[in-house]
Length: 296
Image (cartoon, rainbow, N blue to C red; front, side, top):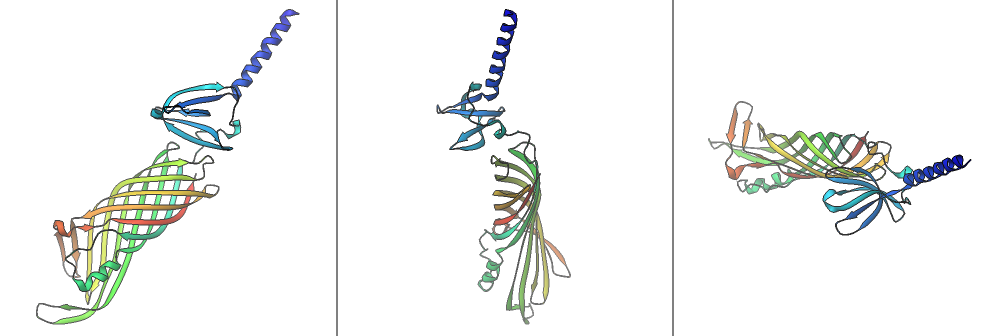
């Protein structure tokens, strides 16, 4: 009889301890001495991921390992975070496809070699429209890699310009330029997702191929100018979840590249020119865009 009673007691104690362990939460102590009652969801060499309660809101976040003085699992017997609010670290969107469009502005100053009569023409060509396509894969909640394609478009036409030939003959007409500047290359991606995995802050940094094309017309002479160089891409944006797997994104980007050589074709002959340093073509621009993001 006593044996049965002891066994029942041991079983009851085991169940109680097991129940407490399920409800127990963890402790993180920062270098500043702050104590956090939380549920640690993942510990890595560089970061500690955890879920905690702040002003009645459940938040998922992380701390750099260098900012953590001490942590202990199952430190608190009473859990502040409900078990169903603790995220599955593998349950985050891994694929992201983004399409954007918006306004662009080339940041380089106009060359001093441009005649005063034409400065307004080339000033107008500094602003234009762009579209941006990107696909990325995140191998963790925080980090990923992807491919980016970006194209800038602008054109402008000035009427009643003239061209004087070596024989003294003067011809009147229009000056027109149409620019296309493309970037394509790999990007490194980082993001911070909110607790519901819908909204996030993102940054992308890449290095790739930049192509420049100017299709123009000077009075009656068609002119085509081409060039290519290595370009860089940097963007920061925020995605607002609006439906399952769908978000609306705002994005600010900076693209850079310098042309040191161009090829000019006037319909009859093609000439390749190495530009001197004072006449390098700066392709740098800033862009503001809005678009849709598909996450899976």
